[in-house]
Image (cartoon, rainbow over all chains, first blue to last red; front, side):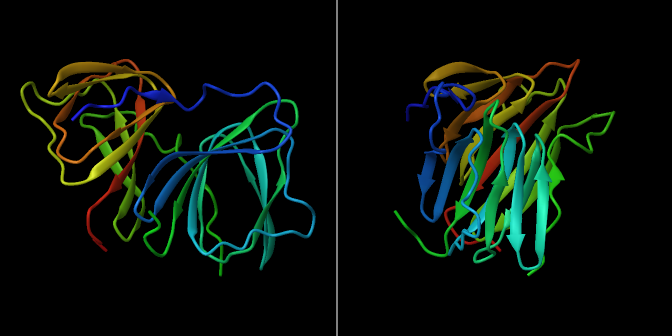
Length: 115
Length: 115
């Protein structure tokens, strides 16, 4: 079996990021590994992600604020911070800095096979 | 549901690392997310990992050389490099620097539920 050449998670970052950039790095069975790049974007006010899947996120670079609805709280994330966002826990990205990229690694763990 | 407080993947690093340190950060279904810290360790010569699970690895900090047996090759990994090591692809850690920590994130994707 041929081994794939390593790729770098900090490369191929567009200079302009009018929207958040979501890229699937690996997909297998019920798992999706994703890179997310933010630059000043945030989820619109009063809009919430309400996902069927668990999401394990690691902030690789930059900073962010994650907001949760119940109980209402805001988590400030710095480089290296990680946490699990369980399925159907309503959350939104409240803030990312607009002067540099924020890079996230997200592991989506779906309840069922999706391939 | 209570959201867990974020933890930091670059914290709680022991000052002494006589052996590689493996820590499970998250385990769910057939998935295990692991932090591995190396400091000069390598897999003994002529010993190979031959795993039943796929392993997606991301080098978060430091450097490493991964060796594969068939075809014989060595991959130098730098910060941010990631690759998939498919199940039963024989590999070993050929080198990590001994003067600073190398921190890996590994996602093990087992063929079957293991909880």
